[in-house]
Image (cartoon, rainbow over all chains, first blue to last red; front, side):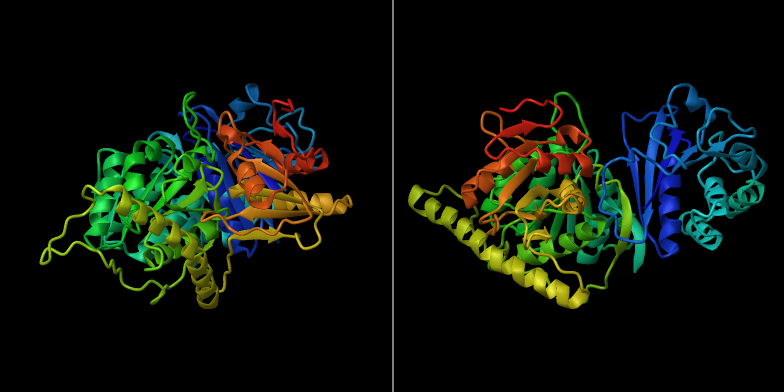
Length: 175
Length: 370
């Protein structure tokens, strides 16, 4: 089972990213569940969502305490939340940032999702949309296939800029 | 069609397939997504139904009672305080023998204000004459909602059905969902005592004890008959759509020395705990109670039992533990866990089994044996 924890701020699309990722994994023929953790949500507050992907039906409903992959959609969260908590020894971190981070105990990757969203003009109510480009980055990392990533995005969003942003993130992420 | 959906969306999709003539509801977290989705179906023309956005849950159930008695299939959804607010009408729907189907997204009760999963809301309506079923997956939420209409409307039953799903832990999680073309699985709604304006009658007038008693017994007789109807409907569902359900979902119980009894998502997660325990050489099994009313006949003879209650009856004990004790004569190890959405993992559940003390009660996270 591959377990993913997504850190974001309320309104950034972390919950939708989890659903998109589950849908893409499902289109890959895997079992997947997306479980957002709902607290006292408000825009800008740190929020967390979970995705599990497996070849077998998933019976676990509790939170992910030892993720294989941690996704951080907003680097400023790292000042207030220990995003690396419980990360598996050979776990991976994917950070939305133009620059790498130091002090990460796993394999750290970074891609400028915000820059990609702005360049693609993928902005809603003044906020860059991060949940579709991040699926492209995850496809590059092999979490889901690129065709399934595209299919999932097209299933949930009609605006083609979402697919373009995902493809840009796929191209930009170095693996 | 194969897709992914949340538990709430799965319930709404089943309601769309069941084509109720009236849906009357009031939104409440974490149920809101169900009635939002149904309202959207109606607005978009995907469901021909009268959607009544009422001003309270009491009115929601009252509207369902009127519609159901008027001769149409009816649905509503609620949760927690909404369910409590409609309590008087919940009794009335059962007493009037109206096969209303209601989704209840299980949520804790305030104060303190808490929107996460707990079963106390459903158990507060345990003695109203409603059938109660608890589901644990998105697919099961869909399938059971469909079956609920058929069971409720069967002339041997004619009682309302409450489909319970855990708030957030199931209502808001996304899993695979296969929706089906239901064909003639649900026959047209037929209520033998439907209001007929050509032939006016009085409903629910002053009834003295002699007759009142008979009406009450008739509810119980139908509850007992409902067990067979549920089995028939679940069998037909399996034959038509390939997914089978029963009064309980048993996992590795055949040769188990100790059985975990739980409901909802905790009952599903218990299966993962069972696999862990089996690897350690502990012969564990899991029995997830699906139907709570009518209460199923359980075969637990000769086993130790660990009951997880996501509820509590103050001054007495866990509601499920009490039911197990009274129906099987077994003194279970009674674990109170998951109240108000408390995080309970499969590791925790395995721990309950390893450290079991039959006859005692343990509040998880409080660590005091009573």
